[in-house]
Length: 314
Image 1 (tube, rainbow, N blue to C red):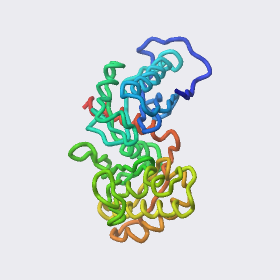
Image 2: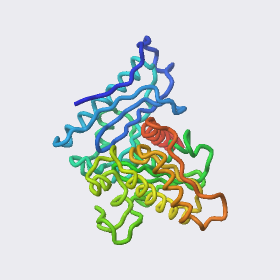
Image 3: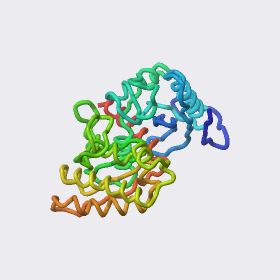
Image 4: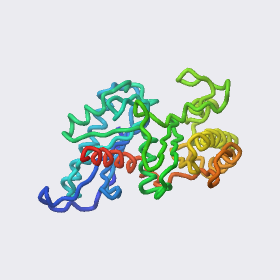
């Protein structure tokens, strides 16, 4: 099982626990890979590891792969970075139960209602806080990224699946089950492709990585110009509906598909949102790429862990 580790060059001498700065262990759960990292309380990612998920193995085998890179980062926190890990923050592809009590990431077939939070707590003895990956992206981009300083905005991930998060008046909306932001199930093509939710024409059924591969027979790394434009238009259509409904003027969009399709995608999305978002009386609604790049998923996960600590301390 291939694994990638970013490491420091030297291992400093151990320091007394009380002298160590605090850190968060960030965990990102996707369909094709797991990633972990150490984040300082100011949002700096100082180390990270990654492992690709294997097909056709059971749920405990997948957790064993994750546990290995979790332990790796905890060891590096102790021996190399001299930081004290205070909590674990998890960002997971959905669907999830609140706090990542269970996770069922699309594309990771062995994990169906897998009790991830308890497994991580038992493994590490640390408090574990979890959320959907797109909602974690919203926290990270609002803290340090493209929406820094804004009190209200939306975030979307366009990747294997499609998700979202809404920050309104400085607060990330949770919803009744902690799953607020399921923008992948906005209908953008009435009567279109059947979605796994049972409806037709959902954004996820038309513009996610899985949908694109099913429609084109090609991997998302080999898109045609037309599919990049179509994907951007459909995402822009959904984003415009969100802006109209929630009185927003910024949607931050990340994820492997969106970032991989680059300017062609974002230009098409902006053109469509210009046609759809005409209700507000404030600034023109706009779409912008997520700014945290390939660190965004882990910084978002770290932000989930940090938010959990702050809530517990109140």
